[in-house]
Length: 152
Image (cartoon, rainbow, N blue to C red):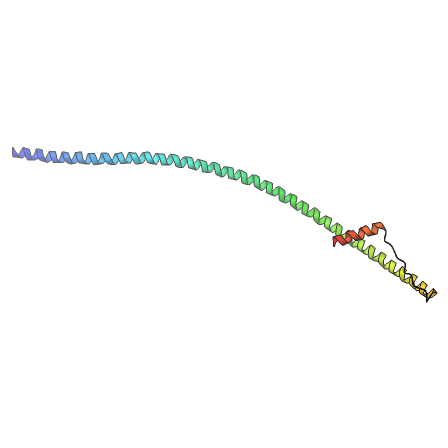
């Protein structure tokens, strides 16, 4: 009988070891299931955040494309205006140069006429006071001269 008792005791110890191992294995599987559920929740959140980021990137692309078109049109308009302003400035410079030449030519003619008149008067009357003819600019010449002064 002691032999059977020893075998029964040995089997009882082995069964206790198997039960203990099964209990530990059950806890590990339970923890793994909890981790799996948490992982599923994290994956779901990550998926939602990724979709939101993709939508934001698409919106940003659309906005940047619209902004690029708007800026390009404004740049082209500004270039056109700059070119037009350059042409207008060149035309104004040319006009001012021609008017300046005409006015300086007219002033030279007036000085020569004045000198001739002065010479005639001094030759005819040496002791008489010399009268220098005052040449008056007409209204149009005064406007041009004023415009030239403002332009410079």
